Length: 201
Image (cartoon, helix red, strand yellow):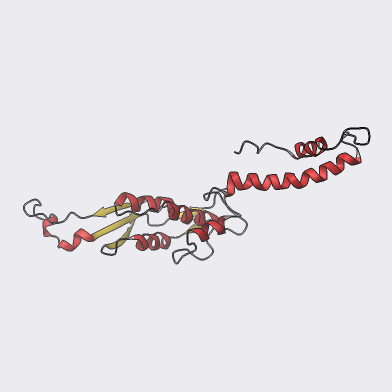
């Protein structure tokens, strides 16, 4: 929270009243017409203050933004071909955070982190390149050398994304089932020389 987020409407009214000259013609009583005028003027600045606090405390954080979410998405190239039609707010935030966190990489840990940002728990299976004299019967030496470029994403059979209280907007679904986003996003960042497939269950 910002240091000034605790300011109140009454505080702005009092601030406007302190700008008035002194004297009996400028009463400070809250029941006076002049106090009502000060309240109206102060309310204008209070509403601006509320929006600034919202900008600093919420909208500046892409994981929480609602009003500025379309602007965040535009900055990171969303929606893109991997974005489902009319996604709920939670999936939009997840896709945005995955884009922001996606600094690039070729390791299994990187792809696992990208999936985690999207809300998926996965593991990666790779195969060791054949090495003469190391593997035993049925081991890696009996696989084609092309297996060194293959990797498998192990994911749950069904991924259910539930709407969270306070993170959804009117019209969002209460829950959704979708694994196509995971596949699309990982295929988009997979190395061009690699062979990628998905195993569910």
